[in-house]
Image 1 (cartoon, rainbow, N blue to C red):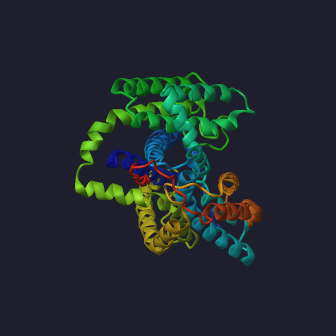
Image 2: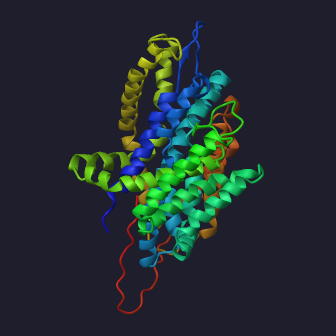
Image 3: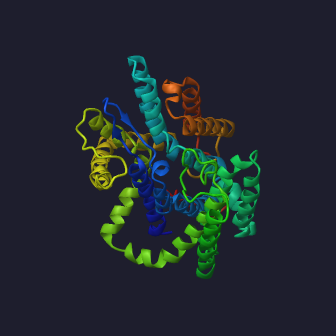
Length: 433
């Protein structure tokens, strides 16, 4: 089955918009004494919260992820594969680059801590390097649940995301159950990906989703208690992302509907060879981009510390004009980071080929698999809240939990394919990236 280039485009677009959004709202201002501060743009300049409507397109990543995972799981089942090795392969695709990233950042944290770097500065840097981690535990959990979620989809179809959405709205009323919205709201987008792949989201349904979701979002931010910002803003009592609110759920539905309506036109635009190569490159580098995109900000901070960066009063017209060279400089830095990481990516690719279980196999250590996945997910969730340098120091417990979890997932596995019936051909399952 030929890959859907539009699905790859959506995932690449989501990652690129996350990178640009984080860079745009990151503000560094040099103090008269020589230090730097990072005022929160969304809190200080309130109108900028409207910009998050354009940059918050992570729903499309979960939508495309559901589409790709559904296809991969269907092909694996058709070839006789089982859930555990399939889950292990998809988890390792995320965890191996995440492990390399965390290992290098934590090594830097330990060195800086021993060297006596200011604890507040180290904590801020550790938070900046982990601010994107919220996505990983949620996506890992949804990937692990894909066999169950897809079984529900095969039986009940589009009723599944509808019921999940209703449960998410109900859970948002009670503070004690709000944490489940982290999974429920993004699971709606993931399940819609299943429906999209199977042709259940017709153009009429997509139009209804886009219009209904947009109307609900507008009502919730104007008549309801929810802010317009789709990124958490310090000082606001209610957030649309921490945990995902009914307003975010409405945005998920609206954005998914709009993306499906735009699919025919965008697919035509993607037919060119150059566009295809660009999408392929961004798709292949998406995990690296997502993990490492805040490192250029820390590199740029050095120019502010030594007084080489051009200065302008925060929020002024001159400051906004400097956002353009700011983004260009960060893009150049990130290109250098990507080039420097190519040898590491090749090593990780070889490691994945060596430790990932075959696509069609019987997993011989399922208990270790689920234990490793739980430990890794818990460590990533901790870092997403507290940063990689909580309190300005090295936190050993989450580092050990993550290292143990990743090791359990990477233990070598024996291939034990099913025995086919007499005369039955066996086709290896294709693995969607």
